[in-house]
Every structure is written in structure tokens, then in C-alpha cells.
Amino acid sequence: MFITLEGIEGSGKTTQIKNIAEFLQSKGQDCVITREPGGTKTGKKIRAILLDPESRDMDPLTELLLYMADRSQHIKKFIYPSLSSGKTVLCDRYYDATVVYQGFARGLDIGLIIRLHELVFENLKPDITILLDLPAETGLMRAWQQIENGSRTALETRFEKETLSFHQKVRSGYLELAKKEPLRFRIVDASNDENQVKNDIIKILSAKWI
Image (cartoon, rainbow, N blue to C red):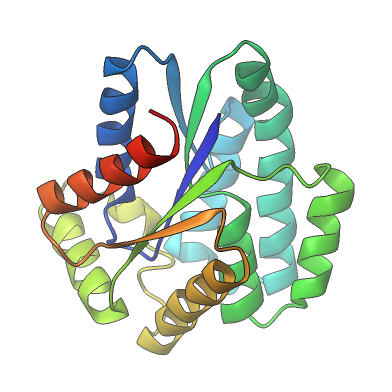
């Protein structure tokens, strides 16, 4: 089983993916948590470049290809081996993030991004994608609060420093993808408190598999 969490900055993906793992493990499932970018040793180096605020002048196509390189290593070295051994893979961001960030928000050809995924990664998609949705203003406020209190590193703030309109495009892109694939996506109101969001996600997973 392959489950991904998506959402704008500050939507709570890192917190909720741990809650999901605990729930599935309590049901006897062997789970592994990973993320993009940075799910492998090579990927961590790519992540450092992509999220470094000093990389603010990076060309959008360069950005896209770095994400694709990270995903290539991630799929071959972690995702496929984990799925093949019967593990449930929980991934913090995946292919949909590339479509919305580099496609909807950066303005790159979405058709190109989709074709690359189909050709290079055999169109590997999650069984279910949990979209943690909330207004961009709320998400950014949460993200910066976490950066200021030290629970989130200031070394990875390149996207947090983007304009509000950029993050609004990201949110709209996610909602558009969810409309196109309603069988895969489940939208959760991430503006609620952590426990409510956790309970909403557990209800979704319980209804689908448990």
C-alpha cells in the first residue's frame, strides 16, 4: 500500500504522517515513513539545494529536473523495494507536489510533467492521497511560527519565502487535481486542530482498508 500526504506549507503533513503510521501499526501493518525531496542519501543533498533560500534564483526547469532526479533515486532505492517487501509506504509529498508547485504555480507545462512521470517512473501513483487543505494565509502563518520557535529549520525556507499568490496557486492546483482524481484523493480540513485532523484521516483509512 502506497499512501501520500500533500498540502501547502504549514498544513501539518509531518505531524499527521506520524499519526497515520501509529494507527496502521496498531492494525498490524508494517509501515515506513519517507519524504520528497530527501528520502535517500542522494536525495538529502538534492533537498538541501532545492529548499535553500539562497537558491531563490533557480530556473523553474532546473527545479523540476532536480525534483525528478530526487524521485528517480527515491523510487528505485526506497519506494519499490519497500512495496515489494510488503511494507506500507507513507510519503510526505510526491508526484502531485511537482505538478502543483512546478506546474500550476511556476507555470511549467503540466502536460510535460505528466509525460515525464509516465515515461520515467512508469506512472507509479499512490493508492490514496490525503490532501490536507487550508487557506494559504493560515498555512504560511503556521509555518513561520514553527520556524521562529525552532521546530522547523530556517535552512529550508525557500518556498516559505514565496509570495502569498504563489501559495494560493499551489492550493488551487491541489484542489484541481483532487477534482480530477476523486477516487484517489481524500480532502481533509487542515484548519482544524491536530486531533480533529488525525481523527478525520483515521476515518478515511478505516473506511477504505481496515
